[in-house]
Image 1 (tube, rainbow, N blue to C red):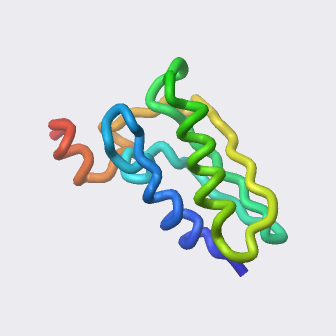
Image 2: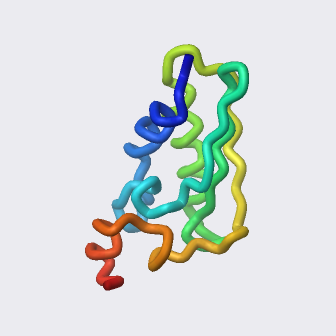
Length: 100
């Protein structure tokens, strides 16, 4: 059975191509849910008009779908709450972005 930790680790390789940082470390992944081997990923983008949004969501779907025993993968985009790197990004990313 797939775990949320395995899903998050798979997503870790997906980077925001504009800044070259993992979307997981940026804090763009809000939630992962698993039910009967189907996975729902709730995430946001750095802005509502992010030009690479479709690329990022397709990458998330691809890496999660590649995990063993995963059925359907849904990627749900939300902007509530709005992404704020000062509170949502990892400490390492905050340091990289100069947000200290």
